[in-house]
Image (cartoon, rainbow, N blue to C red; front, side):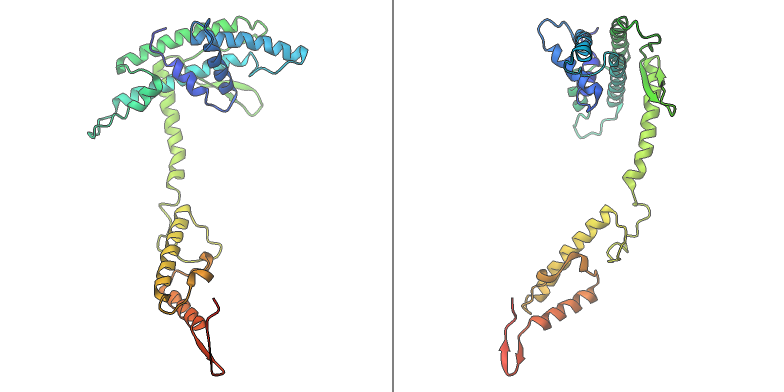
Length: 291
């Protein structure tokens, strides 16, 4: 395999997943640190072999459970290939983006993640090399599973899907990098379509003239809540300033849920507090406000 490969960053990325593949990837990376391991692909193969031994001990001698069933390594290798194609697609798109003219290299973060940078016309060749190497690994693992009668081949991209009858199948299959790009672009477009309403939320329909009204049980968006919070803070500051000369303390009895965002109501409230808290004459004596 070429010195430049998308397999290594793919495996590093998968190791951060909080699922079965993440556990396998972390296990393989730990084995890769051993001095006798020749490459990352060797580490994956050794991880599979050790998993068989651990699984046997677990089944028959109550030993510790393995990180995954040995058969899971077949889908794991396919997952690496999927991720490698995804990174290559991202790399290709990053290098094709126009320069915004502000001196910032927007591809540097991805370059740091990959550990290398190549010209766009080299990317497909690198993915082909990665596929050939991972296919050899996939075959090596599969040859020890004679108990399986139908082992799916490795593809440039393939996803395991569970159907309603609880059976599993493969979808979004691609047998070349170009086909994988088509699949990944379609998936990206579908994902963006689902995210658009989440991003926009009520932006197109919210009544910005009404969000400051204190309507009981009104369903407010997060942005409306922020507007009300800001209005409350400004309202309180204004009341404190207006009431300073009257020696009243609106912050002591003002609750956000009670705020009516109307200048008339605010003025009435301040007047009431001023009247209640100012000095009064009771039976000829002066009474101080009880603060």
